[in-house]
Image (cartoon, rainbow, N blue to C red; front, side):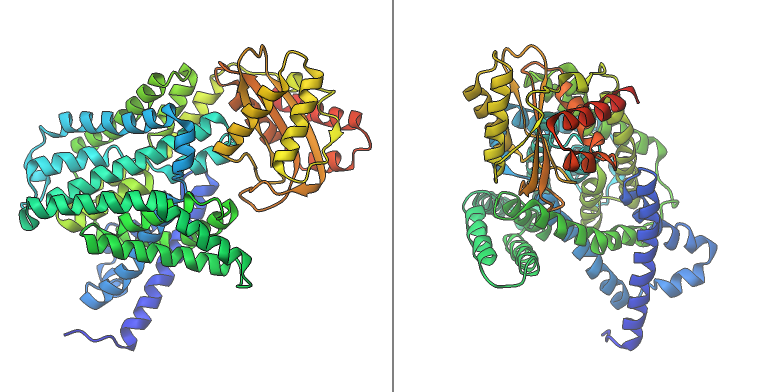
Length: 570
């Protein structure tokens, strides 16, 4: 029997300190170079684990990370908090209401984006030798698992990347994120079935059917009635005198633990429960985007780096590895997801440029691919060599998606954003105190300046789009927009609110600068370019000050056109 003593605690604290510092330093360096922090966090573990340090100084590596059961268990427990809360934060991005409002496009891309890579994966991996699995894994189960692992898209990377590229609030960004949400729910459901099939020999077919029924029932409850209950509790917390946002964050964390316990009791890994808890929060309008972002940043600051650094402590990435299999799995994972999302986008009648961008956005496996792999590794479905292939594909796809998506946007025809600005509709200070009042004001002004635009149709279209996904950006900017049938060319109107408006922005700041962007229904991606240009222009240090201090409408119009024209020529 092993007993916990002061030596174990001291070494555990040293381990956490070393891993966290190394993971944050290398992760920060990766972010500085435009690389996902995930790569640096795993690299920290590789450097400190058997792969590098274990070869250079085996005695030191064994002293820092001994294989003693109690020491390993302590570190594993903290690491698993990382992956559990990572799935909680990932669930924030899955908003069922937004998916339903997006309609055919999101469902088509999300479902086809899973089915196509799973089918391709099954066809390719079926011919793999069974030696890639451990002896207790049936060949068919292994094939299904590998195909599922190759179909999972990292919604957190997609959201962060589109946010950094200033296109998250566009129709392209909204549709892509909603489709990723469908992909995640559908993909994790398939993975849950595979995990259950893996244990069929011990639980039996009847018990397997019972587990599947219960998890589907619980998932349906979470996405419907559960979200309403969470919303009601959240509203009570907001109206109470309890400290905020601390009480809200505690409630969300407890919700994740409770749902994790429920799914574990059902017979499915607790990780799915945390994911469902995140979905409940993501479907609750009472929980602001700023609150979700605060909790997500806390999770990524401490728990997530420890989990991914811990992977490198467990696995020797140079102790074998089949290069051919790594290449095959990577090609299937990246190519299959691209083909699936692209096909889904075209079935939803998206333009060719948008379909290519959506397909590329779906390629990263990121943290989700690695989480799926580590679960299978611990269940004995995989060897370390196969797990290394999953990690490699997840990292490479995460590194490539940024440059590839930027390329897909750059290849589009350049647009003159300054030329779309309506001077008469962009030279006044709005009086509205809510975003809906401001939208009405801007629509009225556009209808006055552009006689061919029907005011009622315009206001309805902008409001419907705003309800799908709020368009508040950071730094006091909002970009409500809509596509209008019969509109010949894009129109942009500007409104200034000196008192500030709450627009549920990610940074929690009030909105002062509102751009109404109108584009033709078949805009071939023009909306994305306009929105990104405006977002970049507002990062200019002097523009917000010039707008706030402008004495008249002419000065506002001049400042806007000057900066937008400069951005176009850059």
